[in-house]
Length: 360
Image (cartoon, rainbow, N blue to C red; front, side):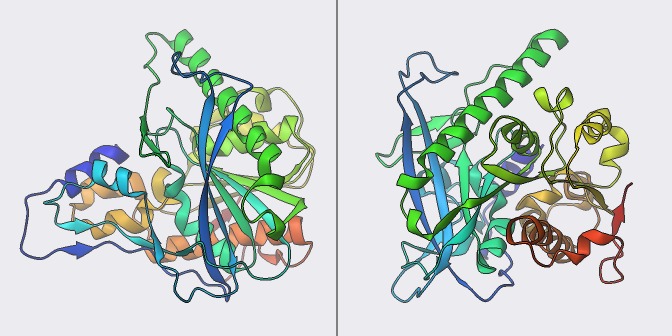
């Protein structure tokens, strides 16, 4: 649905006026730098394309910058991906981010948060939340899961496309979902192993690492935490839980942040909730929908599509309000559990955000 809606709008009949799509500015005081890294895991072949001898990943590192003067703003997606998803005669121009390419980093070492996107989409789809965390002093590393994501562009111009075949039965689907999560966990642990050798490693406080993800990325965060104690706190943004988290206890802080009624409709949330033995939180955003927890919350309302197409995927909540609320609660969680300060929003309902429902 998400890809279909975006493709429908971007391929619309050309018009005289061209609209530049935009992302809301981050709320924190820090300037933002960003860079990319191409990582090659030579210990395993690609799990989805047998001809590829090594698993290759692309990540972006977002960090507080000392200065951005002379450094251009990064595009929302890489040039090759932009050419794939936005036709030359499209009435829209894809957004630019608030991150500046290869800007010099600010002094100090900052807590690190990893981001895993939903199934079939790219690491860029969490930019709205990523940028806000960075503007408040975090380093965020976003991960593309190659051949799971629709498009991944490598530095030499190659573009890896989605290569996971659909299942033919419920049994195959269950096995496939478990494999997808297992591959994502392996990807993430490899990224964790490489953090000390990444660009900007000197800006990272690796004793304070968290992780969050949307949809499939949310269960990825939980399943990573089960097997890797380097990740101290995690967030699932509206994703069903899959894999070991349903059968094993997790004793570190975790936040379940769901769309309107998600938790009531998804029995995996009930099962996973019982497995959370550390500090745990379960909240719901009224009038939101599954894709509210991605950049599409900001972008779809700008496309001019009829409400009956947009509302089922990003809800009826005002887009700017939805984003402001998500930013506040995600930051409060990581502030409390990585910085050990703040986080009062997690104590219970707040008159500032009546759209948030707390579940016991």
